[in-house]
Length: 233
Image (tube, rainbow, N blue to C red):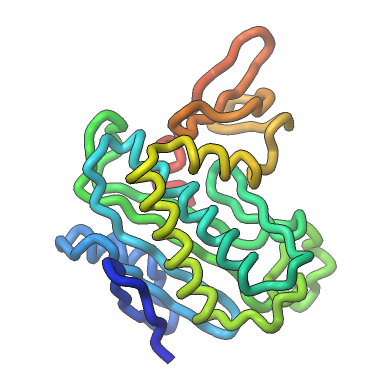
């Protein structure tokens, strides 16, 4: 069954080993319309990517990463059991009931944070079913079915993610970053922890108004822009 998306969004299904994130980047480079969702839904995994055409500098447009993360949390919250908890890592990681369960990632036509890129792609990857033959060996990794979401239909989850993400994009457009910022902080994991990013170690004390990581090292606080995660594997 082909998913149904809200107005302003369109879908392109890919199959087999085709990575929707890679295909979405190719489509964006070819000049496809913004709002295209490339998706690959299988029994074991949900993968999708949304193409954006930002009209603001990249450093501001990167708010689409947390918007997509909040959209996923809202979507699974609407479809899954009420006891399932979804939290978001700063760099796009997704956690379900405390364990890692997929991720979001980003790519853009240009990495200059001060200019609007021609396109920005946000990708989603979530394991539906545990594929490891020995899941007990990786207790920090999980899947939706392992966390009690067996009744969540992958295509329905994709549709719900698109709808909820669009709601947050519209809020960001209409009301600025403040509502998005407030919602994300309530879902963020790792604030207050010792972390390492790009070879720098410190305490993750929060984010600035553009979702840049504030990393305290000794008496100094370093800002790591969210654009630093672009292209990360």
